[in-house]
Length: 217
Image (cartoon, rainbow, N blue to C red; front, side, top):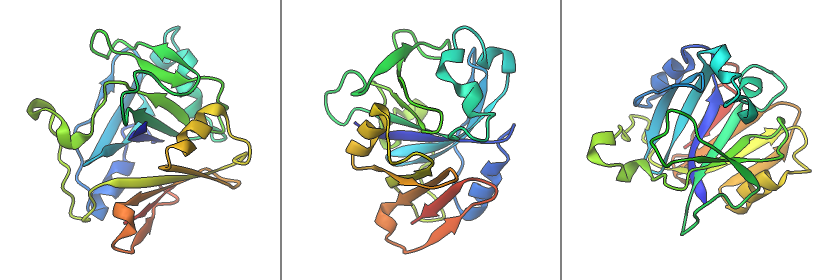
């Protein structure tokens, strides 16, 4: 499997997107997740995207269908990991290669499900898998998103997550690490570092305190 996209907890309306735009990233389309109670703003790259995610409807996000995702906790609790990593197949995988349960939200097209990692603590990122996902640079024309950025970045190379308890990873996070794209480091605070294009420009942007995020490119 390989990284498809990453979500980061944001404030209502995703005002943090303005910071990413000011750096030279081009914003794509956003979504309202009907029935799930969340909304997002997104930034697309050739091989994946970054999603700023927030709660739009507290009743929906705590509904019988959605509560098991723990999205309410992740998007409201400071001690929970504010991150999620979605994977897609890198070969012929038809399901997530980690313990999971199948989630079928109303906003997905018929026949599609999301494999959500099971038995992972809230201190770790949410890991999930979309068997029919594809890279943005091969989206069909009617779904095409902007992938050209003034910042000069093209592809997500790797992600490093700093978090409490990194020495003892769940099976889900261990599977994420096994991809070679995701690394874990121990630390007192949650932090994500995204490397673009193998850091060929040798530059970095630390977006704290607005987002727990460092970009290297």
